[in-house]
Length: 421
Ligand SMILES: *Cc1c(COP(=O)(O)O)cnc(C)c1O
Image (tube, rainbow, N blue to C red):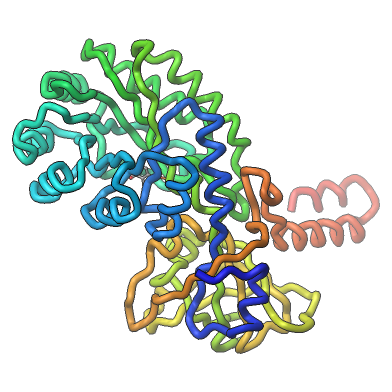
């Protein structure tokens, strides 16, 4: 992988034909360090957030020794980088052959489940192995998260006690645990504490001894309009929640961050292939790395990367991706110089998580290049850049407010009228 100091250096050198994932490995190491230093938990990186080889390699170099995987392909990917790290197969629904291969060929010992049939399947497919770590996935409330991860998986609190008991009985020399996911991009640190209380009540009702509490992922990143509380508040809430759980001194705390380890690290460098008014047609889109810009309408932060002057007047744009599908539209608004034109490059930031991971080859698009850059990410929860994205939108709103203030009519009635608008 080539390294450039700035994205503009890459544009100057080779005006790339395909979209480029601009990656900042250091920001992944810094995020990993935050988890290692501030959370008293074993870290299992959730590979699905960004399964790029450089991410796995960077995390292994940074000392991350656990990986949360959901498929044989993810298992093989991580194993091709390291034969030593611990793999936890945390998909609650797995095929028999995937379980068998994971256990016998790849040394996977940790599996999650959310019903008795899956428990039996794991026992059968591993030949009744006695060194399994089995984690019961519990459904918890997803208040405060952008995406729920309890809609599809997780045993309900009602049915949890009998499954906890059955799993406890099935575990021999390994460890028995509970796991959950508070939902991705969780903006409320107390959501973890609430989930731990909910899970704790089920443990008490079942009367089981639990060896592992795995709090899953959900840790946030920064996006325009979504600036989460300080990461230390997440650590505090989790440590408080853990202290209040009915578990023993030796119970292990595990976590499975995906987004929070990688989101800041990467941008996508896309090219404008056509401009029609406020619509920019790019060579990347919702079937490529911009899934969330379409399906969640996230207005990712953008920067023009042009070798030359640009208008200082910023305007809101919408994007269209390269495929022929009308869904391939990203409403934004994305604020960019008013004179943006065909052939310009745009850096779209904060796409390290669920960006390239979502790419498809639909319509012959979706392939991208990879390059490392040495500048700072557009925002950072770990001190590498400002904590919030200085959106132009805020500036525009401020300008609008200034205009209102300047033109505010004298007299109280007029002021109140303006204020209400
Ligand atoms: C997706 C997922 C994660 C990672 O979630 P983030 O919100 O990206 O941190 C962790 N654990 C499981 C089981 C998941 O499905």
